Length: 490
Image 1 (cartoon, rainbow, N blue to C red):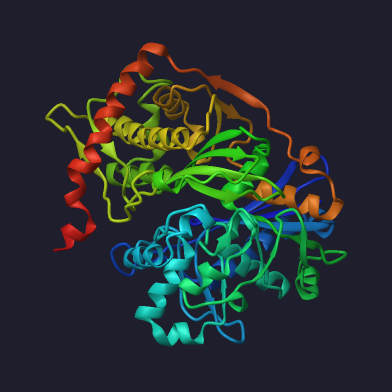
Image 2: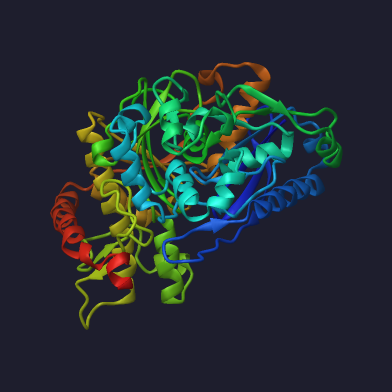
């Protein structure tokens, strides 16, 4: 029996997976986000810990015998967040999250000070990453920075609370801007940019390697017969890839979660930072991946649901199974800024083309299309990086929508595969990593792909119309750039 934990932005999810890789129980505890200023995004790490305890406690109440038999556990987690710890391991301030945009100036400083940063780390300096957050803290909260002795990513902090060990793995570490991504090791030069050295960093392991053991008192709390091994784990997208079996060169998927990802597994480190493509380590050895990342995907539809005053399922049900034509209205999904390809945390969203005949259904379709157009931007950036995608699986909460899947297939002009259990995501991938850490099995033996329940093919005529619409969509970002968050605050 294996336990997978996923520290998401909106919830902690725990799943129990048996030796036949069946999910036999799951539990989820919601989380809140604090936005203390425009562009800021924070969470309390103690809230993560309490939600972790609550989720596993719920599994114990539901499946006590199965939880007692757990031999290994691992964490998947939201990436890039900065948890600052003092000399005694105490949290010094709320964690600054992946979708926080406060460190724009610090990103420019880092790239100016060390032009090799994108080449070594595989990524441009972006406010979402961890390293520029520390420069911001050093400038604006110098007393906190002076007390900081360790910096952990979100899932590594939960791992620390579970085991007492400070450990990080390669896929999450690659999202800090402190990792030499090709060498799979901390970069002394990158650390020096943020006035730090290796003493601030946790120990590095591979995601499927044993990292520590669960504290005895927690094993006793959950009735476990022996303290399980805790594996290195994975960043949320890498964990999703492990869950999908996307471990071979050329494997690809679209993740329609809170944020959006177009993923391609690569057998080598292949950066293309100039076009906003992320090049990270995978959670298994000697494997990497490229990603195009959009900051608002399913969260954009959630925003529209609140504005429209109807549940997402109700809004979608009025659209039918597939689009017959593009919506006459454009939606720019930049509610939290954007990464690929713009690298602009101050970009903001917009509806364009409204008139007296615009209906709620039109706007619902426009939101889905806007997210799909952003994925098309990612696809073109990956192509410019030399990566060819011929089809992709789709996962995440948005994958439930047949209409949205069809829109995505036509906008990308690619076959999109809906898979069984497309929402099990990071927690299931974490459980697979836990299994490998315990058994020593090869990734190819454990990371088998799920059943594809439907392939949504693009319609040639509709895909051509969407290609024309995408060209017009691309013109909107530069036209509206002056209406970003900084301009609107003045």
